[in-house]
Image 1 (cartoon, rainbow, N blue to C red):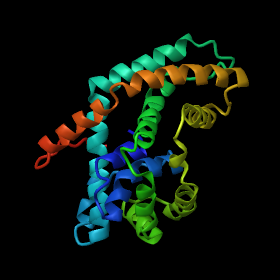
Image 2 (image 1 turned 120 degrees about the vertical axis):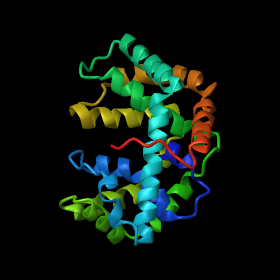
Image 3 (image 1 turned 30 degrees about the horizontal axis):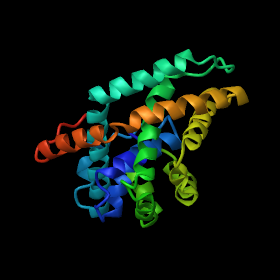
Image 4 (image 1 turned 90 degrees about the vertical axis):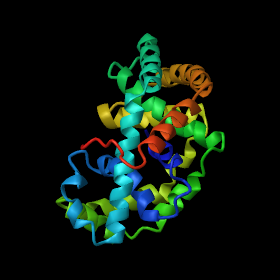
Length: 236
């Protein structure tokens, strides 16, 4: 799941460092793909620090939600549907990755649907991140033996200041986001023709996804409730 979909399950939580924790696994990877953070190996270091304990609790929540999401029949069905639709499009860019669009595209669609249907307060997500001390975040990364953790500061500042996720308000914004990801992966943007084709197809796919998009959130919420006392957590 993407940032706002993760936030959906904990948007009533007032602990900013817990909210940071549910976003941090993706933030870290988006800053540096080579960073491998595995807090479960260092959890003893967090026990006597309430800030680090909150970040770690949020991190575990992120892993739990991702586990249920990626194992869900809903995810498999809808991501496959989007992937197969992408394979039918005569893209001019021969580096387009249909599987990537199927996976990431579904996640961005879900974030967008939560925003445009007012199921989530995106501003509240950023307000929580704004309250976190970057020095504490860097220290948390250093405790996880991340070298050059201080480089995270610039990325985090840009992420918080841009409020980019709030732009997920239309089919056009989804295509724009996917185009950026496409470039980051392949160093090639969609062509103008590709963008027009994507607009048409994403609009049709969004109509399909919107019909039952809350189902996956209800399903995960039920899992979280059932596993409240003994959560089943992946270890990576």
